[in-house]
Amino acid sequence: MARKSLFIVWSLLIVLSLSSLVFAQEMWNWNSFTAQYERFKYEITTYSKSYDYGLDEEVVVEEKQTQEIELVKMDEENTQVTLSNTYYVPQSKLSDELSLIGLGLNWLTDGGEWVTEIMMMGLFAYDLELEVGTTVQTFDGSRFRIVEKQTVAGVDGYYCTKSRRMEDSDGNRVDILISEWVIAPNVGWPLLVRVYSDGEVQYVMELVEYSRKD
Image (cartoon, rainbow, N blue to C red; front, side, top):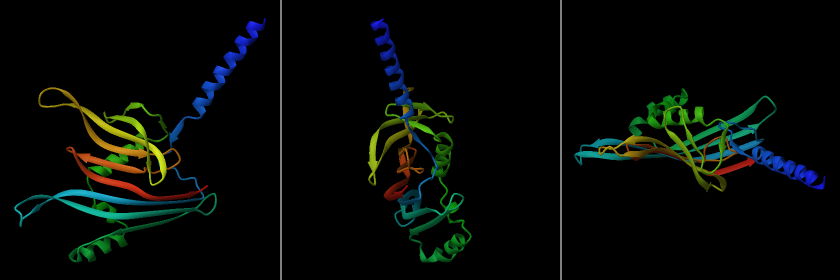
C-alpha cells in the first residue's frame, strides 16, 4: 500500500512538473502592445547599390536614420502613439521628401526586399514559442532556427536565423542566410533585424533604447 501511494505521489509530481514547463514556455507576441507605457528607439541602416560615374563603378550607398516610437495607454480603448524619424535628405530632394512626409507616404519610398521579409515574419511568428535549439519550417519554404539567448539594449531576447536550403554550383546543399532576428517574449517588435540579399546585408534595424512601465 505504501509503495502504491508513493508511486501515485511521484506520478503527480511528474505531471505537475511537466505542466509547469508547458505554462512557463516563453512566447513571442508579435505586434502586441499591452504595457501602460512603452518606448522604442531604433537605429536603421539601409544599403543599396548605385553607379558612381566619377569612379566608373558600382558603389554601395549607406543611409542611416533613427526612429522613435512612444506608446501611452490612455484607457482600455485608446493608446496615444507618438512617432518620429530623424534622417538626412539631400537639399535637392528636400521639397519632395517633405511633401511625402506630409502625406504619410515617406516609408513607401524605401522599398527593398526587407519590407516583404518583415511582413512575412509577422505572419509566421505570431505566438512563436521561444526555445533555444528549435527549428521550424516556415510556409515560404525557409527554415527558422532559434540559436541562442542574446541581449540588445538591455533587453534579454533570443537570436534567430532564417535561411533557405539550396544547391550550389557543385550540387552541394547549402543554407543561404535570409535574415537574422533577436526577439523577446514581452516585446512586440524585434530587438534586432538584419536582412540579406545575395549574401550581403541590405537592411539593419537595431533597438538602442527601450523603456517600459506595466
